[in-house]
Length: 497
Image (cartoon, rainbow, N blue to C red; front, side, top):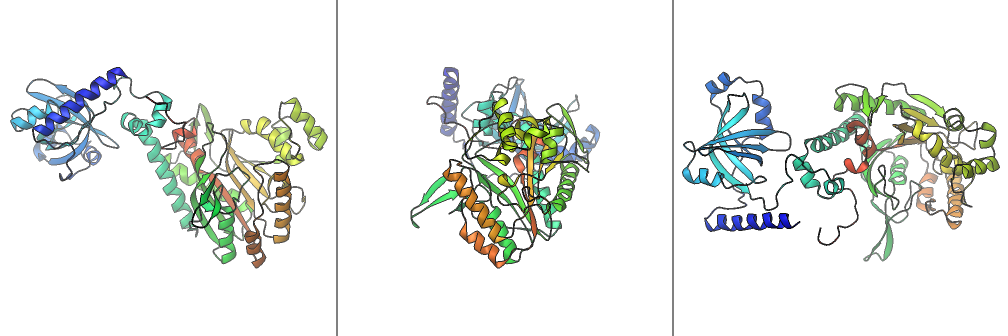
């Protein structure tokens, strides 16, 4: 820390000297004609002879990442969001003031240069500088280049420095953008309309989760940051929009882990006159489109050392079947509540008084099945108790027409045929209220307006939610959700950091 303060004092002193000399530290009137990365891409295959003959001039800007000074010549590397490009200053090719000034700039400064493209004797593409101007003075030194920025918490907390120093981090977020663009295009081409629904809701609904609570002074009411947009999107099905989707921010007041952040991005889409089985096929098609867009069509990916094949069709197991075949639980135990309680306790799983058979089975599933689902797998026919918004299965009303998609040992998507019977939905909400009164903080609340919407008639439909952050983790081989969120939530810094 002391060393940092010394360097910063030196830079502040240098900045004051520059200003005394009439050098603007943060000018905003210099035009930049070419993007540095575009120049690199355009000239990457040009030979030294071709560049010499063309003598093409460029005006680029970038952050100085390296400086080598040799008396009458200076080499620097400039960086933009995608590439680095070498520049070369000769004392007799720029004004004496500019050359002397260039000798005093620092790594981290942002500059604009004009000059002719050529290749050095070693073949490196370089700009021979004819004009050199400071655009932004750096006052806080960048991490030392050979060690870079490696401390994980510092990388998350100071993402701006992380992006400057680590090429792979910039690539992760470029891929994230590409994934979101591909999803939008995929759904739009299939007739889905993108919509926006409230992020502050009077009743937190659409999922079983603990919400964040706030207060609106003008209205004099408490509001909740949404845990899901589901109930609003299904209101749109009632209103006549038959295919809708939203790329949304959700907020859940729950724990933080490598897979969970209090604020996260979800895709939710709903299709009238479809079933959960239709969405299974659509989900496979979507992941093929993502492979084409961000993985050059290759459906084989490596995630944290595991080889995963995204080629459809994917495996399908019913929920109870997976507990026996994958989780290796005794079938005679899991078919009764007493047997399930016994199994849960043997595995150290706490059993709450408000939890029924279905809830305990999902707890067992999380422990003995989910971590083993490395290859893409659909798990279908979940217990009714843990699916308050799903349509009952016609053959077994204790189960629902629902699937969850698992890849790399974690849930990626959740979908079901929608419950559109307002009488059944009211009964489900009542049971959720009873669970909340018994101590379940994540239970769903009664939503009278949503029931009223169903009473007008919602067409048979299916809906799905896909965790965007987890999809990005998968396609970028990142181990933590914080690696794919630009500014993840962290505890406040200690004073003096």
